[in-house]
Structure formats: structure tokens, C-alpha cells
Amino acid sequence: MPVSLENIRNPQDLRQLPRAQLQPLADALRSYLLESVAKTGGHLSSNLGTVELTVALHYVFNTPQDRIVWDVGHQTYAHKILTGRRERMATLRQLGGISGFPRREESAYDAFGTAHSSTSISAALGMAVAARQQGKDHHCIAVIGDGAMTAGMAFEALNNAGVEQDLRLLVILNDNDMSISPPVGALNRYLAHLMSGQFYAKARDMGKSVLKGVPPLLEFAKRLEEQAKGMVLPATLFEKFGFNYIGPIDGHDLNALIPALENMRQLKGPQFLHVVTRKGQGYKLAEADPIAYHGPGKFDPAVGLQAPATPPKTTFTQVFGQWLCDMAERDQRLVGITPAMREGSGMVEFHRRFPDRYFDVGIAEQHAVTFAAGLACEGLKPVVAIYSTFLQRAYDQQIHDVALQNLPVVFALDRAGLVGADGATHAGNYDIAFTRCIPNMAVACPADEAECRQLLSTAYAQDGPVTVRYPRGAGVGKQPGTDLEPLPFGKGEIRRESSQAAGSHRSRLAILAFGGLLYPALEAAEALDATVVNMRWAKPLDEALVVQIADSHDALVTVEDGCIMGGAGSAVLELLQARQRVMPVLQLGLPDVFIEHGDPVKLMQLQGLDAQGIEASIRARFPFVQE
Image (cartoon, rainbow, N blue to C red; front, side, top):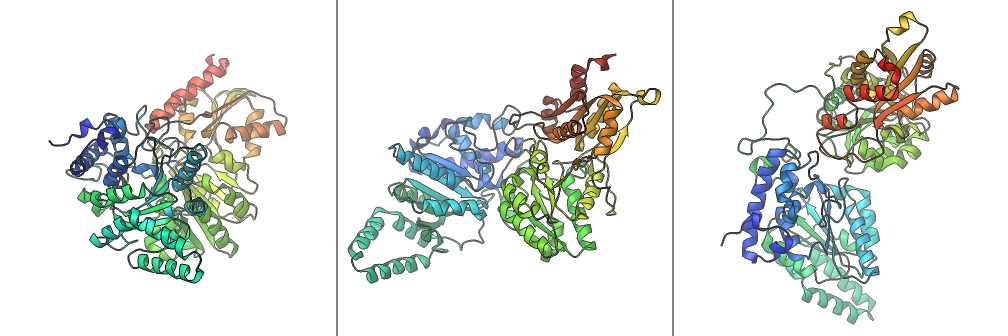
């Protein structure tokens, strides 16, 4: 009887199937996944590549008692479908729907939240140690792939795990870059099955026991074993960390995966299984261009991705990419650095035109920042293109290695503010708060695309570190120029003056806007007859301008797309207190909660940060504007 995906409500149903039905189930799962993501958008290539691995893991292991930690978490769609969320896939990454990443509160099968990479081995090790401490015998599995093995944190965890021999810990390297390993086939499958089996393990342990009293022979046996494995393995690196290394095996071959997992399930101590998968597996268009299909929007699977009928607005990312190329043309000292986000950060053209000055350091944000510091020490001008949420991972390096030494590093901070479908894990809500408190660090907040280009030039001209933060996607559509002229450092501008200012000494209300919220603030100000200031800089504040506005207005409102606590509005309050200006100030920004995934426009409305929301908050706080 043919297997139906609808009948698999949870992994217990999956484990009732005869093994012969698993491949048809995987095929049905892959087809459903493709159709589903085509309707909602989301991560596609990586998920098509983990279908068989997901089926095999839930078939062999007793989930959720056995813990699976997925890394990076955007490869878990098949996992979600098999763990009771198939019918909710239509809500993927939408407001009120399921997340595109594992979430502990979403399902008992999501053992650990993973949206930033390279955390799985540390988390799974913690779980395995906890199980041992509590006398439990369940397995803890870290599935790490999609480049996550390039981060130092993964190797820190391997180094720690290798000395913990009495654990039920399995690390699975999902190697979806075929250039890493040679093609795998029947011989590798046979050897992987042999080396993961009980006979091999017992024979090896017995040999060690017998030869323990003869150290030269024991050392010879160890080297012989390593050399035998080295004939078919990429390296013995993971053995040196203390893991029993098995593989590589074909991650799309259930007849290879399941026996290896079943055998490794019987072994104790740190185990390492290397599987080779293909991004986009089973969908030819994604196989041919896995980068384009990494995170597509909605599309027709029969046709594939199509160019939009009308050209989209220029994004902030594209503005940065063009500025980077133009500045590199002018200044030979410029070098560009990205932690594995060439496409996302808009550096494809820079890489093509200036390959010797382009550095992709892998998923290694800490290294990226200190590497930039080293370059700056020797007279180069590094530009680190990094997402706001990923800069959080290199905070110590930003303070200790860059700011403390006052080195001229430009941080081009993409994805500042809410990011929409990727949700709380990727939102850039905190960068103003955590960067403005660092001595020597300046923070620029461009209001639109044209200003973004100018402030990048301003940042590049400084002799110390500067962060330029800008949001995902496009702004109001203000086309940037082609020159590289900077704006004044640390200076804002008045964009709208209240009509009350012309006929009286004091105007009632002024709005100090930071970044892209300038434009909804201007719209709200029309209804309120308020003064509006485009602050441009969260640090240094334009102190003279702020004091001037405070002295000529009855109340101030600060507006920003970052967290209120410690943000730009807090900087204004600190200045007013220092200058002994006592007046009412309303701070508008993002609250002290994690904001979930959804349409970014709707999310901003829900936070009261659209024009109508800003106006409503001001009227509620300051009754005099009703007059």
C-alpha cells in the first residue's frame, strides 16, 4: 500500500513504516516541501537537501526523548512537517504562524532554538552532560551544516566534547558543499557501515586492551587504523578531537544512512558522522543555482524564479554595494570583509571587480572584526559588511580590538531594525544601544538611500571606528547620487519647523527622528504641526541642535527603529539631564520584548511606529496637541 504523508502525524507514525516505504515517503516529503515553500517563500535549497537525513534521524532515534539540535536552523522544514506541523506550513514565517527556525515553545521536537549558526555542538554537549548527570540514557544529536562548521565556536565545542567519553553524543556534519569531499559510493558506504558496527568497535577496544601493556605496538596499531581510514576519509581531524569519525556517506541514500545511524546509536562516547548532501536536491533549478533558491519569495515551481514585471526599488544593500565599489576605485587602501554573507551584504560586484581586496572569512564574526583591526593597524581601510544581529556575536572584538585602539574600521550594519519573516533571532533591534556605549565608536543612522551613501563616505573619512546602520530592503526610494561627498560628521538637520515657531517664542512639540522613521515622523508632524529634526547620528549627538530645539519647544519626542532601552532616545535624555534641561520627553521605539516574525510593515504598525501610530502616541501623551 503506498505511503501517504498525511498519515504521518508524528515520528511515532514514521517508525511504524517498513523500511521499503521510507524512500517513497521522502519523495513525497520533498514534493510537499517544494510546493509549500513556493507558496509562502522561505529557505528552500538547504531544506531540499536534508529530507532523507531528517527521515532517517526520526526513524532511528526515539524523538523527542532523543534530542536533535539542528544547525543552522533554517534546514528544519522537513523536520517540522514530520513532527506534526504539516498543516501549519501555510503559515510559515507569517504573523501568528510557525517560525522558519526551531523554537522550543513551538514543539517538543524542537530541542533548541537555532537561527544563528554553529551553536549545535555546544548545546547538544550540554544536553548530553545533563542526561549523564541525571542518570538518563537518551541520545543527543547535533546536525551541523550549511557552513556552520566554519565558525570557531563549533571547534571550541568539539575540543570540549572530545574529553567527555561517557556520553550519548552524536555530531552529524551535513556537508552540502561537494567541493569539500570526493564523490562517495558503494565502497564508502560499506566501510562506513563496517566502521560504525559493533564488531569494529569491540575489536578496536579489545585490541587497545591487549596492546596497552606494549606501548610501541599500541601506537603502531593506532597509526595503522588512522592510515586505513585516511585512505577513504577526508582527514582524521575529528579523531584527534576525541570523536569516533564515520563517513563520508551519501546523505540522500537511506540504505546508507539508516544502518550507520543504527550502529552508531549503540556506541558510547562522542561520535561523528560525516554525510554529504546536495543543496536543492530533487529540484533541478535549485540544484543548478542553490544560492538563488536559498531564500526565495513566492514562485511557481514549474517555472522557477522570474524577474519582477516592474523593477524593484533600489535597496539599502545595493546602495552599500555600489558605494563600496566606487570608494574602492578611488582608494586603493579599501578592503571589504564579510562573514559568509557575500550575496546578502551586496558584495558580489565588489568581489568580481576587486578579488584581491575581498575577504570572506566564513561564519566567523569574531575573527572578521579582529582581522579588520589587524588590517587597520597596517594602514589599510577595512569595511566590515555584517548584519546587525550577527555583529552581536563579535561584541568583545568590537570593544577590545577595534574601539579600544581607536582603529578606523567601518561597520556597514545591514538589517538594522525589524527584519520581518526571519523574526526575533535576526532582528537588528539592539545595535544602537550596544554600540553607542562604546568609547570612540560613532553610530550613523541614515534616513534614506541617498543619505546612506553619504554617511558611508562620512564614516570612511574618519580616523576611528564608525557604524552605519541601515534596514533590510528599500526605503522611500530617494535615489542616491554618484559622487562620494560626505555629510558633516555628527550633525543633524531640521526638516520641518512648526508654524507656531514663526509667531511665538516657543513652539509646543518637536520630534527627533533617527533613521528611516524620519518619514513617518514627518507625516505625523503634518497633522500635529510639530517640528521635525533628522538627527542622522545616534553618537555623537548633535548636542547644539538638541539643546536649541529643547530651548524652543515645550516637549520632545524621540523616534527610532531600535530598542527604547539604552537607545538613541536615551542618549537625548542623558544630554538633557547633563545640560540641566527639564522637560517632558516621549521615547518611541521598540519595546523590551522579542518581536516575532511577520510582514515588516504590519509589525511596525503593531509597534505604533507608522505615521498613524506615532501621531496617536503623541496625542495620548501630550493632551495639548488636541487643541
